[in-house]
Image 1 (tube, rainbow, N blue to C red):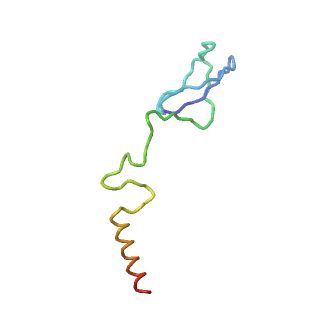
Image 2: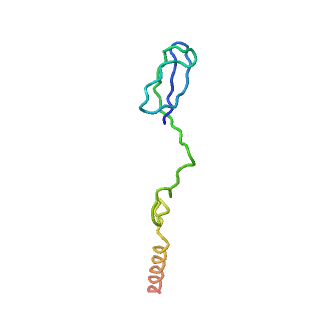
Image 3: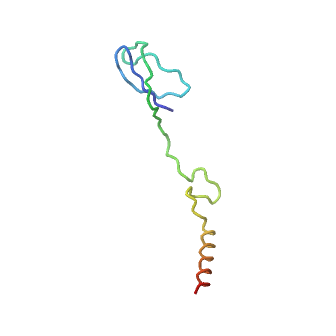
Length: 90
């Protein structure tokens, strides 16, 4: 959920509110209880909750690396073909 910034026109109090994107803007100032809050134009911040995301969270099968490292069987076949090519040049 984004964190929005508000400022009161009556008392000048500034504060942040954690709200859904679809939520109506706040109107009542928590400091002076006047209906003078204005939502400030700023980059909305957001908070990530939980233990985090890992590149292996949504993988299936033997896919373990996003960077595209080859599987152990592919690496073995590549090294074997490289050795054969090296023997041909000798």
